[in-house]
Image 1 (tube, rainbow, N blue to C red):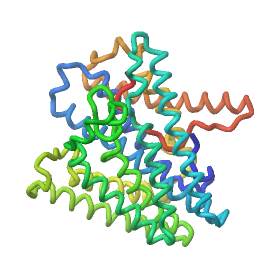
Image 2 (cartoon, helix red, strand yellow):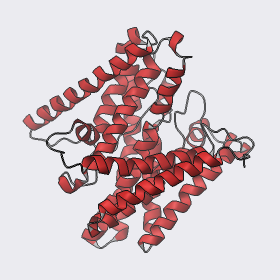
Image 3 (cartoon, rainbow, N blue to C red):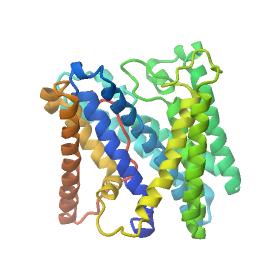
Length: 367
């Protein structure tokens, strides 16, 4: 899957850099989850590693939303047709949704004893694809940029606020399991669900509209400063509100709480400012491994999940100390860079441009 933004310097390398950071967090999350031995899983350091790893999926979804807005705005400028632009982005969303099932089929075929039931598991690609479709539809609803921001921001707030309620609605329980798993988590069938995860895509699209406007006006630096201030404010608000009486008695902070969602959106928004500042540093030059990881993030996701969770990794499953896992994580990142280089070389010899790049997901298991 290629990024909707052209592969040039104007491609906004700082977004690729931030996506590359998400790749590092994703690999850390998976190796820590899969390979850490039981004795180390109750330590504070393990808990901290999980918290860090937990930011990978929101970041991928958020950046997918940014890419939705950039792609839609760019195609509308070229064609003058908002409907055609939105339709093109929705088509990409459905392609990603199809890739989700292809990925599950690969996992099933490569792991002897895997259950057919696993083909229906809802992972991040299953949520990312339809969420892109939703964001593109909301983008099309607004006749102006402010209207589009209002539609996307309103959807983001609604998704965050309704998430605790969805988890308790009895009407959802009456749906087939394969459908219910998309709406709220079901043990063994859901790694992700639309509530609240689709909200990160719509939130990212709001940021993407701001990036698109600032890019055309030549004011990306000003926008980055704004992202920094807004992100800190959102994160502080989420943290502060988390100590207030719960609006939803059944809400759990780490899973369904709107305040935790707000805090994470704040951190993600601040990440835009930090990545811009880093990539615009005066001494920047030459090749960037982070940008390369970001531009090939789907390819990395596709191969590394099987390497971490698949049958070949069975000897490492919950067998390493946390320190050993972190060293293995570094080795895995280096291996992914080498795999990207090998992939690009093979495609170059075949006379084909690399295609497996772009907005990658984060899964939590491959089995």
